[in-house]
Image (cartoon, rainbow, N blue to C red; front, side):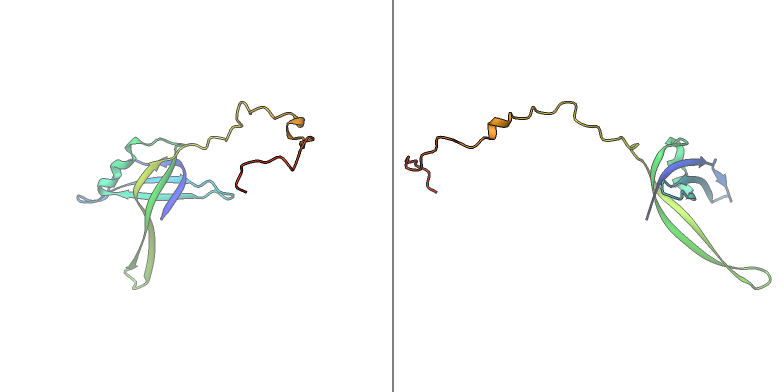
Amino acid sequence: MEILGKIRVINPVQQVSATFKKRELVVTTDEQYPQHILVEFTQDKTDLLNNFALGEPVKISINIRGREWVNPQGETKYFNSIQGWRIEKMQAEVPASAPTSLPPMPAADAFAPATQFNEEEHDDLPF
């Protein structure tokens, strides 16, 4: 899956444990009702965000992860996360511009019907 949008937030790397680190990014989609989506990059993928800046248009390849957790009272809870595994810079939309010069239009009489047409003249066209 992919998310397209502009970078709104890039958080610093968080060292969660001795063996696990993550870095979060918020991207704002460009739709009628923009969404602010939190995407986390983990382990070696945290370095992917080093070359990106706020406001930059990006395409993020993601996986949706879900997990189950049972709290001390025995209640089961479910959590989802969005994990990024690739991020690419997108070109900012450039409005299409009209050509600067158009070829000249032929004169109206250039398409006038032939006036001196003789059907009896022989031509060597095969059709």
